[in-house]
Structures are given as structure tokens and as C-alpha cells.
Amino acid sequence: MTARDPDRLIRSFLSEGETDLPDRAFDAVRRDIHRTRQRVVIGPWREPDMSSLAKLAAAAAAVAVIALIAVLALPRGNGGVGGTQSGPSATAVPTPSPSPQPLPQSGAVQPGRYWLNAVGDPTANPLPRIALTLPAGWTANGDLLLKNYAPDMNFGGLDASDVGAGPALVAWQMSGTFVDPCTDHTLVKPTPGPGIDALANALAHQPGTTAGPPTAVTVDGYSGKFVELTVTADITKCNSFSIWTSPDGNDRWVQGTNEMNRMYILDVEGRRFTFNARIPARTTAADRVELETIIDSFDIVP
Image (cartoon, rainbow, N blue to C red; front, side, top):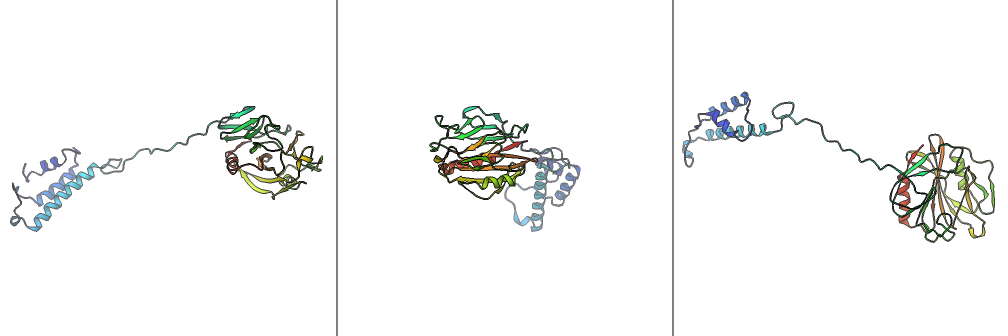
């Protein structure tokens, strides 16, 4: 091969890459090579025989061929040589949450996602229910969920001394309060209507308790309020200390002085929906965080 054979020179450059070079590319490179033909010399270049202009032209021709090879090596798309590779891009598919399982009627609950049924109002059929995620250490007792369960205690594992007691959750439907939680379990009349504010105010103003103001809250996209109530009375002097009643005639009686209850009242598609979080005085900071995490996992199904 000599420098005067441009077609063979081009094919030599492309011997390990693209085999089909467009005619216009052959023509462009051939013109550059014809303009800068040089005599092949075996051995060292003889500087006196090559002018600076000729050396520059030869270098330019070599660069042009190399650049052409690089362009041809790029991925081909619908646009032809050098086009951007087209095609569908990968899309991340979110991992679906596990389907909720029914809670056991009693005993330890394995970590997972479960249904917590709402109870306490036989006139509402069906009641909304809650899908929630539980970590280890929780126990079911009917429709009540408890942390650090002790089977020899009353009220599903809690007693007046709160020994071993942790937080608890129940989706019981609240409807009113008593004249005195300790001494007079006559219902306050009139009972609060179906809205949120009247019930929240009634829960926040009870003898033998202190409570913060009703506080706006959103749970699983449903707005409402919660009342955080702490028992200040010595409940050992009471037959029972009851802080709310439900439409089915049951009531929530507390197990310890200084026990806190956070009562949630939500508007779920025009219906009042309530649930209660019990927070004993001995509840650790870690258990409080765990309780909040569980509530954050709620999916309320009307």
C-alpha cells in the first residue's frame, strides 16, 4: 500500500471497526489525503524535506480520519450515524406493601401488617377499619393492642400499678363523658353531636384530669383533632375512673394515676371516627416513638 492509494488506507483504518463507510465520508477523507500526499520514508523523518505546512496538513488529515472512526463507533439510533440510542427506559416498580392479616384474638403478634377493627358502635355498619404495621413486642387481646403484655394482670395485661405496662391502642368509638369520672358515672347531657369539636371539648374538660387544648391532626389524609388527657386524681379512691363512654354502653376506665390517654377524633368521609392511644407514666421514650410510628402507618379504610 502507498500513500497514493486512499481507498485502501481508509479501509485499513476501519478494519477493526465499522465495515460500511458512507460514500460521503470516503469522499471527504479522500480529499484530505489527496491534499497532503507524502512520500513514504523508511526510517527517521528527514525534517529538511518536509515543510511546516505539509506536516500540519498531514496531522490534520490523520485527526480527521481518527475523528471519523470515533463518530462511527458511537451507538446508532433512529437518526442514523452518531444518533442517540433510542428505546424504552427502565422504570422502577415500587414494592407493594404486604396485605394486612387479621389480628389473633389473643397472644403475641408477630411483626407485620394487620387489620385493627373499629368497635363500640353497633349502629354503624360497617365501621371503618385500620390497616397498621406492628413491630415485635405487641400483643392482641380482642380488639386491644398492648405493648409489654403481662397475662396475670387485668384489663388485658394492665393493672393499677402499671408494672410492665407499655402503650396500648384501641379503635373504640367514643360518644360522650361522665359527670365525674371517679364518683358519678351519669352521662353528661346533652351528649356531643356527630361532629368533632363538641366531643373534643367534652373530653378535654373532665374532673380529676388535666388536658391540653384540642389539637388539629391528620391521620392517613383524614383531618380531625386529638386530646391528650392525663389523670391527676388518686384513682385508688375510685371504684373506677372512666374518661369516655361509647354507643354500645361500654366505657374506658384508666389503670393508673398519671396515666395519659391521647384520644383521636377524625372525620372519615363525613363520619366521626375515633381511636385511643394509652400512654402510661412509665412508657419509655423509645416506646413513644414506636407508638407514633405505628400511627403513621395507619391506612384507614372507610
